[in-house]
Length: 223
Image 1 (cartoon, rainbow, N blue to C red):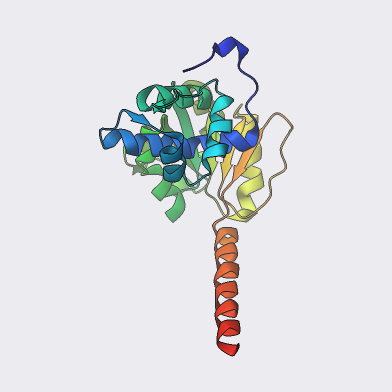
Image 2: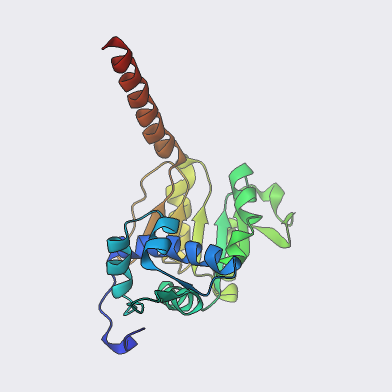
């Protein structure tokens, strides 16, 4: 069951960060032909506690039905609406190295409510080259294409040294949401949202846990 959208409370950032995981789990459940799911089943599929899931979904006004759980299709629509995925978001990717090209070819954009509308690189020799169906444009055309394509989100897939300059150019072109893959902290105005994907940092965290496992195993052998 859902509450009136007009009385929904503001959704906390931590909850927003977990909503895509719930949507992904619901998609998997729907593909198995399941029409309703309990909070425990959905929480397990999403990798969270059921109490956390119920609390998060309550921010959407969705509480499920006792003895039935959540209607999969309805809840997926509710989460998609909350995340802004009921409309199509045009994305610009800057940096046509290996990472940028892989992102440009990523099919998950289309599934998730996004489409790659423009590609850019500062190397003029790449201008006109196509990655998939989208041509690579020079950075000098960023502002023009941002207006023509209605670009909403920018993805930075450049080396760290040029990431801030690219970010500044995206902001100057009117883009206020940026996904940054460069290993650098960007300085942006308060009205610009930046999400950073740092693969090296994630590997460092995994290395720490692997080291702890080895130390625990060595300690166990020594006892």
